[in-house]
Image 1 (spheres, helix red, strand yellow):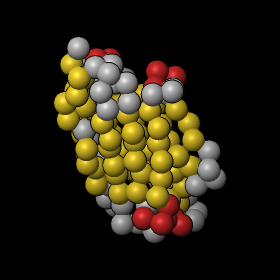
Image 2 (cartoon, helix red, strand yellow; image 1 turned 90 degrees about the horizontal axis):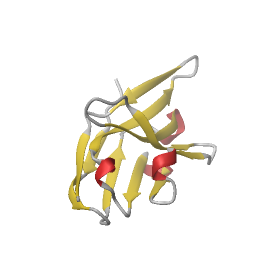
Image 3 (tube, rainbow, N blue to C red; image 1 turned 135 degrees about the vertical axis):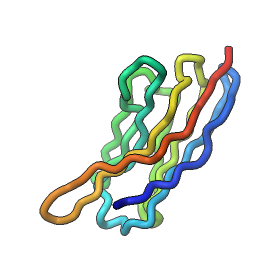
Image 4 (cartoon, rainbow, N blue to C red; image 1 turned 135 degrees about the horizontal axis):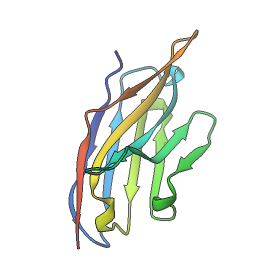
Amino acid sequence: QVQLVESGGGLAQAGGSLRLSCSTTESPLSINAMGWFRQAPGKQRELVAVSRSSGVTDYGDSVLGRFTISRDSAKSTVYLQMNNLKPEDTAVYYCYAERDWGDYVNDFWGQGTQVTVSS
């Protein structure tokens, strides 16, 4: 079982900023991708941003230009800088990691951290 430890989140005003971080003790060589998804009440979980070991990053359309993902591969840690926050960014944010076991890969999830943006 891969453990993902999340920190950050909390309450912010519209237009403000927050920073999330997520780390794992797994070897960086075994992690193909790390990133963030979010789920708002009554909605499906959606992509926020993912950073892949290849260097490719993917962002959800709703956060493009406002959120930035970065990754410290040496520490198996990923950060999400969230700027110009909007009330619609309010959700539980889940850290995600894809772990490579050699013959197969598995997806793992953190327990989630609440982000609330007030108008």
